[in-house]
Length: 201
Image 1 (tube, one colour):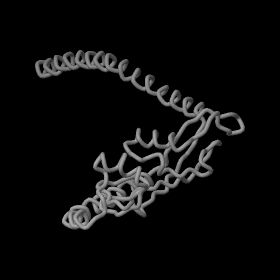
Image 2 (spheres, rainbow, N blue to C red):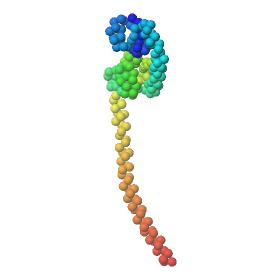
Image 3 (tube, rainbow, N blue to C red):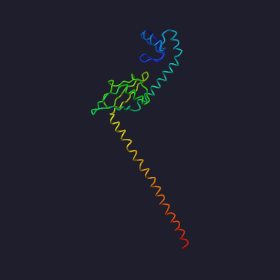
Image 4 (cartoon, helix red, strand yellow):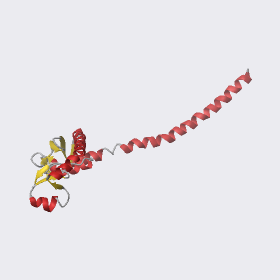
């Protein structure tokens, strides 16, 4: 059965596309939800009247995909995983893992659009992952898988130097004020000595 897509549908196409679908799928799922219209002369004319708006929306999606590609390729995605001494992971990095980490970085990508080499990553290292965006637009994501233990050690070592740096600053303040008091006392005495010298002459 031929239908015209009223919205973008994964694995079928975009709004305005004409597709062949199974009659049962169309009648029981797509048509009741308003996701498609039957492909006939009246509905084709309806979509032609909406053509300019549909093209605008497609252009917006293409622009958004290019912007997202730049963000994805800007820097590596670092994922820490438990691993043995031989570098083999206790578990694996899957498309779902990458989608979750990208989400934390503010980037929304569907799991089906993540193409991981050999489906999963099972050892430490740096990998190139293909991310399908919109249309022909794709991004090459660099994934760095590091040992979780090393990441924890680095985070513990970084805050350590900070407290000693603040302690000398607190101790220096009272020493500066006591020196200032000592300097003021001899200044008063030197003034009296200057006044007695003219009287002697």
